[in-house]
Length: 270
Length: 325
Image (cartoon, rainbow over all chains, first blue to last red; front, side):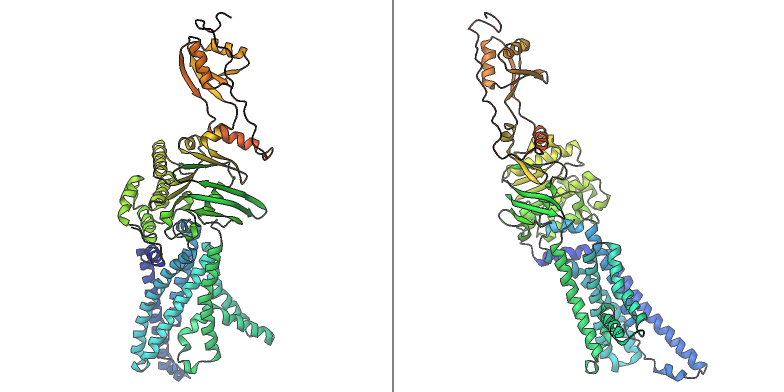
Protein backbone atom coordinates (compact mmCIF):
# COMPACT_ATOMS: atom_id res chain seq x y z
CA UNK A 1 0.00 0.00 0.00
CA UNK A 2 1.34 3.41 -0.95
CA UNK A 3 2.41 5.76 1.84
CA UNK A 4 1.44 9.41 2.19
CA UNK A 5 3.68 11.72 0.29
CA UNK A 6 6.35 13.24 2.52
CA UNK A 7 9.44 15.35 2.05
CA UNK A 8 11.67 12.27 2.13
CA UNK A 9 10.10 10.62 -0.89
CA UNK A 10 10.18 13.81 -2.95
CA UNK A 11 13.78 14.56 -1.94
CA UNK A 12 14.78 11.01 -2.80
CA UNK A 13 13.23 11.34 -6.26
CA UNK A 14 14.93 14.68 -6.86
CA UNK A 15 18.30 13.34 -5.69
CA UNK A 16 18.02 10.56 -8.24
CA UNK A 17 16.92 12.99 -10.94
CA UNK A 18 19.53 15.65 -10.24
CA UNK A 19 22.49 14.74 -8.07
CA UNK A 20 22.96 11.03 -8.63
CA UNK A 21 23.04 11.21 -12.41
CA UNK A 22 26.45 10.20 -13.82
CA UNK A 23 26.68 13.43 -15.80
CA UNK A 24 26.24 15.53 -12.66
CA UNK A 25 28.77 13.51 -10.70
CA UNK A 26 31.34 13.71 -13.47
CA UNK A 27 30.79 17.45 -13.80
CA UNK A 28 31.17 17.93 -10.05
CA UNK A 29 34.37 15.94 -10.11
CA UNK A 30 35.70 18.10 -12.93
CA UNK A 31 34.94 21.25 -10.94
CA UNK A 32 36.70 19.83 -7.89
CA UNK A 33 39.75 18.72 -9.85
CA UNK A 34 39.93 22.11 -11.58
CA UNK A 35 39.87 23.88 -8.20
CA UNK A 36 42.70 21.72 -6.88
CA UNK A 37 44.74 22.19 -10.05
CA UNK A 38 44.21 25.94 -9.83
CA UNK A 39 45.48 25.98 -6.26
CA UNK A 40 48.49 23.87 -7.08
CA UNK A 41 49.25 25.95 -10.14
CA UNK A 42 48.98 29.24 -8.29
CA UNK A 43 51.17 27.96 -5.48
CA UNK A 44 53.77 26.69 -7.93
CA UNK A 45 53.85 29.95 -9.87
CA UNK A 46 54.23 32.05 -6.76
CA UNK A 47 56.97 29.74 -5.45
CA UNK A 48 58.80 30.03 -8.73
CA UNK A 49 58.37 33.81 -8.72
CA UNK A 50 59.71 34.13 -5.20
CA UNK A 51 62.77 31.97 -6.05
CA UNK A 52 63.49 33.92 -9.22
CA UNK A 53 63.33 37.28 -7.49
CA UNK A 54 65.40 36.04 -4.57
CA UNK A 55 68.06 34.52 -6.85
CA UNK A 56 68.38 37.71 -8.89
CA UNK A 57 68.97 39.72 -5.76
CA UNK A 58 66.24 42.22 -6.60
CA UNK A 59 65.91 44.95 -4.06
CA UNK A 60 63.06 44.25 -1.71
CA UNK A 61 63.17 40.57 -2.59
CA UNK A 62 63.06 39.78 1.12
CA UNK A 63 59.41 40.87 1.09
CA UNK A 64 58.65 37.76 -0.90
CA UNK A 65 59.64 35.86 2.16
CA UNK A 66 56.53 37.24 3.76
CA UNK A 67 54.32 35.33 1.35
CA UNK A 68 52.42 32.78 3.39
CA UNK A 69 53.25 29.16 2.82
CA UNK A 70 49.55 28.49 2.36
CA UNK A 71 47.77 30.85 -0.03
CA UNK A 72 44.30 30.13 1.27
CA UNK A 73 41.11 28.94 -0.36
CA UNK A 74 40.17 32.14 -2.18
CA UNK A 75 40.86 31.30 -5.81
CA UNK A 76 39.74 27.64 -5.78
CA UNK A 77 36.68 28.65 -3.79
CA UNK A 78 35.76 31.24 -6.38
CA UNK A 79 36.22 28.74 -9.19
CA UNK A 80 34.29 25.82 -7.76
CA UNK A 81 31.50 27.89 -6.23
CA UNK A 82 30.94 29.93 -9.39
CA UNK A 83 30.90 26.78 -11.50
CA UNK A 84 28.31 25.13 -9.27
CA UNK A 85 26.34 28.35 -8.96
CA UNK A 86 26.04 28.81 -12.72
CA UNK A 87 25.28 25.11 -13.19
CA UNK A 88 22.49 25.24 -10.62
CA UNK A 89 21.08 28.48 -12.04
CA UNK A 90 20.92 27.14 -15.59
CA UNK A 91 19.54 23.75 -14.57
CA UNK A 92 16.86 25.22 -12.31
CA UNK A 93 15.78 27.59 -15.08
CA UNK A 94 15.69 24.77 -17.62
CA UNK A 95 13.28 22.81 -15.43
CA UNK A 96 10.84 25.70 -15.79
CA UNK A 97 11.21 26.17 -19.51
CA UNK A 98 11.12 22.52 -20.62
CA UNK A 99 7.99 21.36 -18.80
CA UNK A 100 9.65 19.52 -15.92
CA UNK A 101 8.22 21.83 -13.26
CA UNK A 102 4.71 21.50 -14.70
CA UNK A 103 5.09 17.72 -14.71
CA UNK A 104 6.41 17.52 -11.17
CA UNK A 105 3.75 19.87 -9.78
CA UNK A 106 1.11 17.41 -10.99
CA UNK A 107 2.80 14.80 -8.80
CA UNK A 108 3.91 17.03 -5.91
CA UNK A 109 1.31 19.79 -5.54
CA UNK A 110 2.86 20.98 -2.25
CA UNK A 111 5.07 23.67 -3.72
CA UNK A 112 7.16 24.40 -0.63
CA UNK A 113 7.99 20.72 -0.34
CA UNK A 114 8.91 20.57 -4.01
CA UNK A 115 11.03 23.72 -3.87
CA UNK A 116 13.11 22.46 -0.96
CA UNK A 117 13.39 18.98 -2.46
CA UNK A 118 14.69 20.53 -5.70
CA UNK A 119 17.18 22.83 -4.00
CA UNK A 120 18.78 20.39 -1.57
CA UNK A 121 20.33 18.01 -4.16
CA UNK A 122 22.36 20.98 -5.40
CA UNK A 123 23.42 21.71 -1.83
CA UNK A 124 24.51 18.09 -1.44
CA UNK A 125 26.35 18.11 -4.75
CA UNK A 126 28.19 21.36 -4.09
CA UNK A 127 28.97 20.42 -0.48
CA UNK A 128 30.33 16.99 -1.40
CA UNK A 129 32.64 18.06 -4.20
CA UNK A 130 33.70 21.32 -2.54
CA UNK A 131 34.56 19.40 0.61
CA UNK A 132 36.64 16.93 -1.37
CA UNK A 133 38.49 19.69 -3.22
CA UNK A 134 39.13 21.74 -0.09
CA UNK A 135 40.19 18.66 1.84
CA UNK A 136 42.92 18.02 -0.73
CA UNK A 137 43.91 21.69 -0.64
CA UNK A 138 43.94 21.66 3.16
CA UNK A 139 46.26 18.65 3.20
CA UNK A 140 48.64 20.44 0.84
CA UNK A 141 48.34 23.60 2.90
CA UNK A 142 49.07 21.86 6.18
CA UNK A 143 52.06 20.21 4.54
CA UNK A 144 53.42 23.61 3.57
CA UNK A 145 52.41 25.66 6.59
CA UNK A 146 53.09 23.09 9.28
CA UNK A 147 50.98 21.22 11.81
CA UNK A 148 50.61 24.34 13.92
CA UNK A 149 48.30 25.84 11.31
CA UNK A 150 46.31 22.63 10.83
CA UNK A 151 43.31 23.58 12.93
CA UNK A 152 42.95 26.97 11.27
CA UNK A 153 43.35 25.53 7.78
CA UNK A 154 40.80 22.79 8.44
CA UNK A 155 38.27 25.29 9.77
CA UNK A 156 38.90 27.58 6.84
CA UNK A 157 38.31 24.62 4.53
CA UNK A 158 34.95 23.92 6.20
CA UNK A 159 33.96 27.56 5.92
CA UNK A 160 34.96 27.52 2.27
CA UNK A 161 32.64 24.55 1.80
CA UNK A 162 29.84 26.52 3.47
CA UNK A 163 30.61 29.46 1.20
CA UNK A 164 30.35 27.21 -1.84
CA UNK A 165 27.01 25.87 -0.63
CA UNK A 166 25.68 29.40 -0.08
CA UNK A 167 26.74 30.30 -3.61
CA UNK A 168 24.94 27.35 -5.16
CA UNK A 169 21.80 28.20 -3.16
CA UNK A 170 21.80 31.70 -4.63
CA UNK A 171 22.45 30.23 -8.09
CA UNK A 172 19.49 27.87 -7.74
CA UNK A 173 17.32 30.78 -6.62
CA UNK A 174 18.39 32.82 -9.65
CA UNK A 175 17.16 30.01 -11.89
CA UNK A 176 13.90 29.66 -10.01
CA UNK A 177 13.16 33.37 -10.04
CA UNK A 178 14.01 34.06 -13.69
CA UNK A 179 12.83 30.74 -15.19
CA UNK A 180 15.04 31.38 -18.22
CA UNK A 181 18.51 29.90 -18.65
CA UNK A 182 20.36 32.89 -20.07
CA UNK A 183 18.63 35.33 -17.73
CA UNK A 184 19.43 33.20 -14.69
CA UNK A 185 23.12 33.04 -15.58
CA UNK A 186 23.15 36.79 -16.26
CA UNK A 187 21.57 37.49 -12.88
CA UNK A 188 24.06 35.22 -11.15
CA UNK A 189 27.04 36.78 -12.88
CA UNK A 190 25.63 40.20 -12.18
CA UNK A 191 25.45 39.52 -8.45
CA UNK A 192 28.80 37.79 -8.17
CA UNK A 193 31.00 39.49 -10.75
CA UNK A 194 29.56 42.42 -12.66
CA UNK A 195 28.24 44.53 -9.81
CA UNK A 196 31.31 43.99 -7.59
CA UNK A 197 33.52 44.83 -10.58
CA UNK A 198 31.68 48.06 -11.35
CA UNK A 199 31.59 48.96 -7.70
CA UNK A 200 35.31 48.30 -7.42
CA UNK A 201 36.00 50.61 -10.36
CA UNK A 202 33.80 53.32 -8.85
CA UNK A 203 35.44 53.23 -5.45
CA UNK A 204 37.83 56.03 -4.73
CA UNK A 205 35.98 58.55 -6.86
CA UNK A 206 33.45 61.14 -5.92
CA UNK A 207 32.22 62.59 -2.65
CA UNK A 208 32.27 60.75 0.65
CA UNK A 209 28.55 60.01 0.55
CA UNK A 210 28.94 58.31 -2.81
CA UNK A 211 31.88 56.38 -1.50
CA UNK A 212 29.83 55.21 1.44
CA UNK A 213 27.05 54.04 -0.88
CA UNK A 214 29.52 52.25 -3.15
CA UNK A 215 31.10 50.55 -0.17
CA UNK A 216 27.69 49.54 1.13
CA UNK A 217 26.75 47.99 -2.19
CA UNK A 218 30.04 46.17 -2.31
CA UNK A 219 29.54 44.68 1.12
CA UNK A 220 25.98 43.70 0.28
CA UNK A 221 26.98 41.58 -2.70
CA UNK A 222 26.82 37.85 -2.02
CA UNK A 223 30.06 37.10 -3.84
CA UNK A 224 32.00 39.50 -1.64
CA UNK A 225 30.38 38.24 1.55
CA UNK A 226 30.68 34.55 0.74
CA UNK A 227 34.28 34.95 -0.42
CA UNK A 228 35.23 36.51 2.91
CA UNK A 229 33.79 33.63 4.95
CA UNK A 230 36.95 31.44 5.12
CA UNK A 231 38.92 34.43 6.47
CA UNK A 232 36.65 35.29 9.38
CA UNK A 233 38.75 33.11 11.66
CA UNK A 234 39.92 33.63 14.29
CA UNK A 235 36.75 35.35 15.49
CA UNK A 236 38.64 36.98 18.32
CA UNK A 237 40.35 39.15 15.71
CA UNK A 238 37.18 39.81 13.75
CA UNK A 239 36.64 43.35 12.53
CA UNK A 240 33.42 45.16 11.73
CA UNK A 241 33.79 44.12 8.10
CA UNK A 242 34.07 40.52 9.22
CA UNK A 243 30.74 40.65 11.03
CA UNK A 244 29.14 42.46 8.14
CA UNK A 245 30.30 39.72 5.78
CA UNK A 246 28.89 37.06 8.07
CA UNK A 247 25.57 38.84 8.39
CA UNK A 248 25.26 39.50 4.67
CA UNK A 249 26.09 35.85 3.95
CA UNK A 250 23.32 34.66 6.22
CA UNK A 251 20.83 37.14 4.74
CA UNK A 252 21.53 35.91 1.22
CA UNK A 253 21.67 32.23 2.15
CA UNK A 254 18.35 32.40 3.98
CA UNK A 255 16.62 35.31 2.28
CA UNK A 256 17.16 34.23 -1.32
CA UNK A 257 15.44 30.84 -0.82
CA UNK A 258 12.58 32.45 1.10
CA UNK A 259 11.90 34.98 -1.65
CA UNK A 260 12.30 32.35 -4.36
CA UNK A 261 10.02 29.93 -2.56
CA UNK A 262 7.33 32.59 -2.21
CA UNK A 263 7.51 33.32 -5.93
CA UNK A 264 7.53 29.60 -6.76
CA UNK A 265 4.48 29.04 -4.58
CA UNK A 266 2.40 31.92 -5.85
CA UNK A 267 3.19 32.11 -9.53
CA UNK A 268 1.33 30.16 -12.16
CA UNK A 269 3.05 27.72 -14.43
CA UNK A 270 2.48 29.29 -17.82
CA UNK B 1 -15.49 13.21 -7.79
CA UNK B 2 -14.14 16.37 -9.32
CA UNK B 3 -16.00 19.50 -8.36
CA UNK B 4 -15.66 23.04 -9.65
CA UNK B 5 -17.54 25.84 -7.93
CA UNK B 6 -17.85 29.43 -9.11
CA UNK B 7 -14.49 29.74 -10.83
CA UNK B 8 -13.53 33.19 -12.01
CA UNK B 9 -10.25 34.15 -13.58
CA UNK B 10 -8.93 37.23 -15.30
CA UNK B 11 -5.63 37.59 -17.10
CA UNK B 12 -4.92 41.30 -17.34
CA UNK B 13 -8.05 42.83 -18.85
CA UNK B 14 -9.40 39.58 -20.21
CA UNK B 15 -11.95 37.58 -18.22
CA UNK B 16 -11.23 33.99 -19.17
CA UNK B 17 -13.54 32.20 -16.74
CA UNK B 18 -16.87 33.45 -15.41
CA UNK B 19 -18.64 31.59 -12.65
CA UNK B 20 -17.75 28.13 -13.96
CA UNK B 21 -19.36 25.38 -11.92
CA UNK B 22 -19.80 21.69 -12.67
CA UNK B 23 -19.16 18.22 -11.31
CA UNK B 24 -17.57 15.13 -12.75
CA UNK B 25 -19.34 12.33 -10.92
CA UNK B 26 -17.87 9.03 -9.86
CA UNK B 27 -18.48 6.21 -12.27
CA UNK B 28 -19.14 8.53 -15.20
CA UNK B 29 -17.13 9.92 -18.06
CA UNK B 30 -17.73 13.66 -18.22
CA UNK B 31 -16.87 15.23 -21.53
CA UNK B 32 -15.53 18.76 -21.39
CA UNK B 33 -15.96 20.56 -24.70
CA UNK B 34 -15.73 24.02 -26.06
CA UNK B 35 -14.08 25.99 -28.85
CA UNK B 36 -10.44 26.98 -28.70
CA UNK B 37 -9.91 29.58 -26.02
CA UNK B 38 -13.11 28.68 -24.17
CA UNK B 39 -11.22 28.09 -20.92
CA UNK B 40 -11.13 24.29 -20.73
CA UNK B 41 -7.40 23.96 -20.19
CA UNK B 42 -7.40 26.87 -17.74
CA UNK B 43 -10.11 25.14 -15.72
CA UNK B 44 -8.18 21.87 -15.75
CA UNK B 45 -5.00 23.61 -14.64
CA UNK B 46 -6.90 25.06 -11.71
CA UNK B 47 -8.23 21.66 -10.73
CA UNK B 48 -4.64 20.38 -10.81
CA UNK B 49 -3.53 23.35 -8.64
CA UNK B 50 -1.23 24.70 -11.33
CA UNK B 51 -3.11 28.00 -11.42
CA UNK B 52 -5.03 29.88 -8.78
CA UNK B 53 -8.49 31.22 -9.62
CA UNK B 54 -9.41 34.76 -8.68
CA UNK B 55 -12.36 33.28 -6.84
CA UNK B 56 -14.09 29.95 -6.56
CA UNK B 57 -12.89 26.52 -5.56
CA UNK B 58 -11.89 23.27 -7.12
CA UNK B 59 -12.21 20.08 -5.13
CA UNK B 60 -11.15 16.51 -5.78
CA UNK B 61 -12.95 14.07 -3.51
CA UNK B 62 -13.87 16.97 -1.29
CA UNK B 63 -10.53 18.69 -0.90
CA UNK B 64 -8.22 20.89 -2.96
CA UNK B 65 -5.65 18.90 -4.91
CA UNK B 66 -2.91 21.10 -3.45
CA UNK B 67 -3.63 19.50 -0.06
CA UNK B 68 -3.58 15.93 -1.34
CA UNK B 69 -1.76 13.53 0.97
CA UNK B 70 -1.40 11.02 -1.86
CA UNK B 71 -1.62 13.07 -5.06
CA UNK B 72 -1.10 10.33 -7.65
CA UNK B 73 -3.74 8.18 -5.98
CA UNK B 74 -6.21 11.03 -5.72
CA UNK B 75 -6.01 12.45 -9.22
CA UNK B 76 -4.30 11.15 -12.32
CA UNK B 77 -3.65 14.07 -14.64
CA UNK B 78 -2.60 14.37 -18.22
CA UNK B 79 -2.65 17.91 -19.62
CA UNK B 80 -0.64 17.45 -22.78
CA UNK B 81 2.85 16.76 -23.98
CA UNK B 82 4.04 20.13 -22.61
CA UNK B 83 3.64 18.64 -19.16
CA UNK B 84 6.31 15.97 -19.48
CA UNK B 85 9.92 16.06 -18.21
CA UNK B 86 11.53 15.69 -21.60
CA UNK B 87 15.05 15.13 -20.32
CA UNK B 88 14.08 11.97 -18.50
CA UNK B 89 13.57 8.59 -20.11
CA UNK B 90 10.15 6.98 -19.94
CA UNK B 91 11.35 4.56 -17.29
CA UNK B 92 12.96 7.35 -15.25
CA UNK B 93 9.78 9.39 -15.44
CA UNK B 94 7.65 6.54 -14.15
CA UNK B 95 10.26 5.85 -11.47
CA UNK B 96 9.98 9.51 -10.45
CA UNK B 97 6.21 9.17 -10.27
CA UNK B 98 6.53 6.06 -8.12
CA UNK B 99 9.21 7.45 -5.80
CA UNK B 100 7.47 10.77 -5.14
CA UNK B 101 4.18 9.03 -4.41
CA UNK B 102 5.40 5.99 -2.52
CA UNK B 103 4.33 3.57 -5.25
CA UNK B 104 5.88 0.21 -5.96
CA UNK B 105 8.38 0.54 -8.79
CA UNK B 106 7.77 -3.09 -9.71
CA UNK B 107 4.69 -1.85 -11.58
CA UNK B 108 6.77 0.18 -14.06
CA UNK B 109 7.39 -2.63 -16.60
CA UNK B 110 3.68 -3.47 -16.75
CA UNK B 111 2.78 0.21 -17.13
CA UNK B 112 5.19 0.54 -20.02
CA UNK B 113 3.76 -2.62 -21.58
CA UNK B 114 0.24 -1.27 -21.21
CA UNK B 115 1.08 1.87 -23.18
CA UNK B 116 3.36 -0.01 -25.58
CA UNK B 117 6.49 1.91 -24.65
CA UNK B 118 8.50 -0.96 -23.18
CA UNK B 119 10.77 -1.03 -26.22
CA UNK B 120 11.76 2.63 -25.74
CA UNK B 121 11.80 2.69 -21.95
CA UNK B 122 15.40 3.92 -21.81
CA UNK B 123 15.10 6.60 -24.45
CA UNK B 124 14.60 10.25 -23.44
CA UNK B 125 11.08 11.56 -23.80
CA UNK B 126 12.48 14.38 -25.94
CA UNK B 127 13.04 11.81 -28.68
CA UNK B 128 9.44 10.58 -28.63
CA UNK B 129 6.81 11.33 -31.22
CA UNK B 130 3.62 13.10 -30.12
CA UNK B 131 1.75 9.82 -29.84
CA UNK B 132 4.50 8.28 -27.74
CA UNK B 133 4.54 11.29 -25.44
CA UNK B 134 0.78 10.97 -25.06
CA UNK B 135 1.23 7.35 -24.02
CA UNK B 136 3.99 8.22 -21.56
CA UNK B 137 1.81 10.89 -20.02
CA UNK B 138 -1.15 8.54 -19.77
CA UNK B 139 1.00 5.91 -18.11
CA UNK B 140 2.14 8.44 -15.53
CA UNK B 141 -1.44 9.58 -14.95
CA UNK B 142 -2.59 6.03 -14.25
CA UNK B 143 0.47 4.87 -12.34
CA UNK B 144 -1.10 5.65 -8.97
CA UNK B 145 -4.37 3.87 -9.81
CA UNK B 146 -6.07 7.19 -9.12
CA UNK B 147 -9.61 7.59 -7.86
CA UNK B 148 -10.16 10.38 -10.39
CA UNK B 149 -8.77 10.92 -13.85
CA UNK B 150 -8.45 14.17 -15.76
CA UNK B 151 -7.28 14.11 -19.35
CA UNK B 152 -6.88 17.06 -21.70
CA UNK B 153 -6.98 16.10 -25.38
CA UNK B 154 -5.57 12.62 -24.73
CA UNK B 155 -6.24 11.28 -28.24
CA UNK B 156 -4.05 13.84 -30.01
CA UNK B 157 -1.39 12.00 -31.93
CA UNK B 158 -2.77 8.53 -31.25
CA UNK B 159 -3.31 6.19 -34.17
CA UNK B 160 -6.74 4.52 -34.59
CA UNK B 161 -5.68 1.51 -32.55
CA UNK B 162 -4.41 3.81 -29.84
CA UNK B 163 -7.68 5.71 -29.84
CA UNK B 164 -9.61 2.47 -29.51
CA UNK B 165 -7.32 1.34 -26.69
CA UNK B 166 -7.78 4.63 -24.86
CA UNK B 167 -11.53 4.47 -25.28
CA UNK B 168 -11.51 1.07 -23.60
CA UNK B 169 -9.28 2.33 -20.79
CA UNK B 170 -11.51 5.32 -20.13
CA UNK B 171 -14.67 3.25 -20.08
CA UNK B 172 -13.04 0.73 -17.77
CA UNK B 173 -11.90 3.48 -15.40
CA UNK B 174 -15.45 4.77 -15.17
CA UNK B 175 -16.83 1.28 -14.81
CA UNK B 176 -14.59 0.83 -11.79
CA UNK B 177 -16.23 3.83 -10.18
CA UNK B 178 -13.74 6.56 -10.99
CA UNK B 179 -14.66 10.02 -12.08
CA UNK B 180 -13.20 10.77 -15.49
CA UNK B 181 -13.05 14.32 -16.83
CA UNK B 182 -12.10 14.28 -20.45
CA UNK B 183 -11.68 17.13 -22.88
CA UNK B 184 -11.35 16.60 -26.58
CA UNK B 185 -11.86 18.38 -29.85
CA UNK B 186 -12.79 15.07 -31.45
CA UNK B 187 -16.47 15.34 -30.60
CA UNK B 188 -17.35 12.19 -32.46
CA UNK B 189 -14.84 10.29 -30.34
CA UNK B 190 -16.03 11.93 -27.12
CA UNK B 191 -19.57 10.97 -27.95
CA UNK B 192 -18.58 7.31 -27.88
CA UNK B 193 -17.36 7.46 -24.29
CA UNK B 194 -18.98 10.41 -22.52
CA UNK B 195 -21.94 9.89 -20.21
CA UNK B 196 -22.40 13.57 -19.59
CA UNK B 197 -21.09 16.74 -21.12
CA UNK B 198 -20.09 20.18 -19.94
CA UNK B 199 -19.89 22.76 -22.70
CA UNK B 200 -17.80 25.83 -22.17
CA UNK B 201 -17.87 28.88 -24.39
CA UNK B 202 -16.08 32.18 -23.78
CA UNK B 203 -15.34 31.13 -20.24
CA UNK B 204 -18.90 30.25 -19.27
CA UNK B 205 -20.76 26.99 -18.95
CA UNK B 206 -23.40 27.10 -21.67
CA UNK B 207 -24.74 23.57 -21.57
CA UNK B 208 -24.44 20.78 -19.11
CA UNK B 209 -26.10 17.44 -18.58
CA UNK B 210 -26.33 13.87 -19.68
CA UNK B 211 -25.94 13.16 -23.38
CA UNK B 212 -29.55 12.05 -23.56
CA UNK B 213 -30.91 15.17 -21.85
CA UNK B 214 -28.85 17.47 -24.00
CA UNK B 215 -29.91 15.75 -27.19
CA UNK B 216 -33.56 16.34 -26.38
CA UNK B 217 -32.95 20.06 -26.03
CA UNK B 218 -31.94 20.66 -29.58
CA UNK B 219 -35.30 20.44 -31.21
CA UNK B 220 -38.34 18.30 -32.04
CA UNK B 221 -38.19 14.56 -32.10
CA UNK B 222 -36.85 13.04 -35.30
CA UNK B 223 -37.18 9.42 -36.35
CA UNK B 224 -35.31 7.54 -39.04
CA UNK B 225 -37.27 4.76 -40.68
CA UNK B 226 -37.24 2.49 -43.69
CA UNK B 227 -40.25 0.58 -44.92
CA UNK B 228 -41.26 -1.48 -47.91
CA UNK B 229 -42.79 1.66 -49.48
CA UNK B 230 -41.07 4.79 -48.22
CA UNK B 231 -42.51 7.02 -50.91
CA UNK B 232 -46.07 6.16 -50.03
CA UNK B 233 -45.43 6.71 -46.34
CA UNK B 234 -43.77 10.03 -47.07
CA UNK B 235 -46.64 11.23 -49.23
CA UNK B 236 -49.17 10.19 -46.64
CA UNK B 237 -47.44 11.91 -43.74
CA UNK B 238 -46.86 15.04 -45.74
CA UNK B 239 -50.58 15.32 -46.43
CA UNK B 240 -51.10 15.67 -42.69
CA UNK B 241 -48.50 18.36 -42.39
CA UNK B 242 -45.65 16.33 -40.94
CA UNK B 243 -42.16 17.24 -42.02
CA UNK B 244 -40.63 14.36 -43.94
CA UNK B 245 -37.17 14.27 -45.41
CA UNK B 246 -34.45 11.83 -46.25
CA UNK B 247 -31.22 11.09 -44.41
CA UNK B 248 -28.76 8.23 -44.85
CA UNK B 249 -31.06 6.71 -47.45
CA UNK B 250 -33.98 6.56 -45.04
CA UNK B 251 -37.05 8.61 -44.21
CA UNK B 252 -36.54 11.26 -41.57
CA UNK B 253 -39.82 12.12 -39.91
CA UNK B 254 -40.10 15.11 -37.58
CA UNK B 255 -42.67 15.48 -34.85
CA UNK B 256 -43.98 11.95 -34.49
CA UNK B 257 -43.15 9.43 -31.83
CA UNK B 258 -41.57 6.20 -33.06
CA UNK B 259 -44.38 4.20 -31.53
CA UNK B 260 -46.94 6.08 -33.59
CA UNK B 261 -44.98 5.58 -36.76
CA UNK B 262 -44.51 1.87 -36.06
CA UNK B 263 -48.25 1.49 -35.44
CA UNK B 264 -49.04 3.27 -38.66
CA UNK B 265 -46.68 1.16 -40.76
CA UNK B 266 -47.99 -2.07 -39.31
CA UNK B 267 -51.63 -1.09 -39.77
CA UNK B 268 -50.81 -0.07 -43.30
CA UNK B 269 -49.71 -3.62 -44.03
CA UNK B 270 -46.23 -2.47 -44.85
CA UNK B 271 -42.94 -4.00 -43.83
CA UNK B 272 -40.91 -2.03 -41.31
CA UNK B 273 -37.17 -2.53 -41.79
CA UNK B 274 -35.65 0.18 -39.63
CA UNK B 275 -36.87 2.48 -36.88
CA UNK B 276 -34.52 4.70 -34.92
CA UNK B 277 -34.79 7.89 -32.92
CA UNK B 278 -32.25 10.27 -34.37
CA UNK B 279 -30.38 11.99 -31.55
CA UNK B 280 -28.48 15.18 -32.10
CA UNK B 281 -24.79 14.42 -32.23
CA UNK B 282 -22.42 16.09 -29.85
CA UNK B 283 -21.08 18.02 -32.80
CA UNK B 284 -24.55 19.33 -33.65
CA UNK B 285 -25.08 20.27 -30.02
CA UNK B 286 -21.75 22.02 -29.93
CA UNK B 287 -22.31 23.94 -33.18
CA UNK B 288 -25.81 25.05 -32.16
CA UNK B 289 -24.51 26.16 -28.79
CA UNK B 290 -21.49 27.99 -30.08
CA UNK B 291 -23.49 29.93 -32.66
CA UNK B 292 -26.50 30.68 -30.48
CA UNK B 293 -24.60 31.77 -27.44
CA UNK B 294 -23.51 35.01 -28.99
CA UNK B 295 -27.09 36.27 -29.36
CA UNK B 296 -28.12 36.07 -25.74
CA UNK B 297 -27.55 34.20 -22.57
CA UNK B 298 -30.84 32.42 -21.99
CA UNK B 299 -32.67 33.68 -18.92
CA UNK B 300 -35.40 31.11 -19.06
CA UNK B 301 -35.78 27.50 -20.01
CA UNK B 302 -35.48 26.80 -23.71
CA UNK B 303 -38.82 26.57 -25.53
CA UNK B 304 -40.29 23.14 -25.30
CA UNK B 305 -40.70 21.18 -28.48
CA UNK B 306 -44.38 20.46 -29.34
CA UNK B 307 -45.25 17.07 -27.96
CA UNK B 308 -45.16 14.43 -30.65
CA UNK B 309 -48.69 13.89 -31.81
CA UNK B 310 -50.25 10.56 -32.45
CA UNK B 311 -50.81 9.98 -36.10
CA UNK B 312 -54.51 10.78 -36.54
CA UNK B 313 -55.36 8.43 -39.30
CA UNK B 314 -55.14 4.74 -39.11
CA UNK B 315 -56.26 3.02 -42.31
CA UNK B 316 -59.12 0.64 -41.87
CA UNK B 317 -58.15 -2.93 -41.46
CA UNK B 318 -57.50 -4.48 -44.83
CA UNK B 319 -56.59 -1.23 -46.40
CA UNK B 320 -53.01 -0.25 -47.29
CA UNK B 321 -51.70 3.26 -47.42
CA UNK B 322 -53.61 5.28 -49.96
CA UNK B 323 -56.33 2.66 -50.36
CA UNK B 324 -59.98 3.28 -49.60
CA UNK B 325 -59.69 6.98 -49.06
